[in-house]
Length: 340
Image (cartoon, rainbow, N blue to C red; front, side):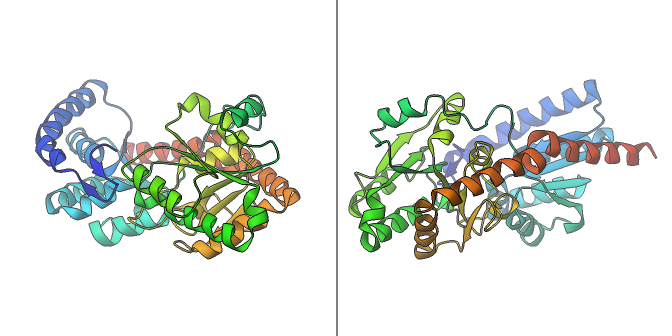
């Protein structure tokens, strides 16, 4: 995260550090692979890890899986050398996974990856660690100065362009103008920091939202359960700027039984089923986002119904046990193919 400027370009210092990082990484990975000889190598991020793992996979004939979570595809496409390194990883891999069709398409069209190697797999959530639980929510509501009858909208993520939180703020401003009574019941809790944090705080002030928004900054993972359970509605208005994958925060909220309002971008369609466990709207469409939020904010029964559907999806499809089983099946296939 720290190598990127708002997740759209590399910081200049990164280019200076990259040669040393790749050399040290290659030495470490090659040494470990030589000693351990694993049945499968699974590299998370095409760069640097996919390239480093591909070196070892080719040298020691180990099946390779590469997973693309987001900005690594962007970085590779911006630099010819990095692009060749990513292509080397993709050519070596027997399986490439991503958590969004947009990332798959970027890897295929911009970096030459073989589309037949792909499987779309979300990163999932531990359904036993995050579950509906009201413990601590009353205290947190009080700490944040949120009235007991307020409808809480929760947005979790780094403050970078691809999260689209500026469209959420503009949607809230539209609600303030079109339905002041409903807007008065809303509180927007923003969790996370990033390069655009100050800029988006200024935008909220300019839009007259200062009293309705709570900017809580970074929250320890162990505390995220109470924040998710505090929420009435989770919001992920991600945009393709650049292409990115499904935010784990969406699955965290679903595991706590929350309905989700999401854009039609960034892999949200892997988790949010329109009209089932949430409402899906076009990306960069503040009026559509405002309408979806208004619909759920005004209908507690619908929120409860969609929230229950979210939890069922986690228990049956998007929890760690189900997703791990998919990976294990792939690993077994790749290891078996090598033995043959």
